[in-house]
Length: 124
Image (cartoon, rainbow, N blue to C red; front, side, top):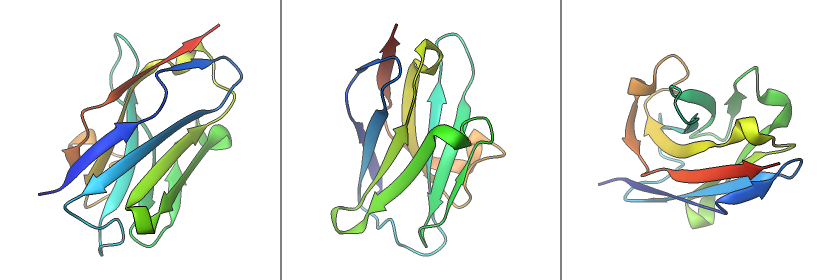
């Protein structure tokens, strides 16, 4: 079965770049018709879609975060990475990587498999 695991630092200073990696097992990030997505949940708020990379390597980002976001993959390692630059305390959240048959931009429920999430705190 497909498993996803987020990794990266739990504390980042304001103005720095947040970098998280999702390691995938039980499935290939290049498998046809799969989309690999980053979603976050700030404390006390709902899920917020960040962006996605497709099986072909194409990317799409939330308009509100696009200018600060980069998602890329390392296919030999079966990993994909989120980089979010110029972070502020408003970027504090639990960050999840997830898999679905779409990019999950319309609904989080389109993502079928999820990592456990990782807490990232941005200090001022």
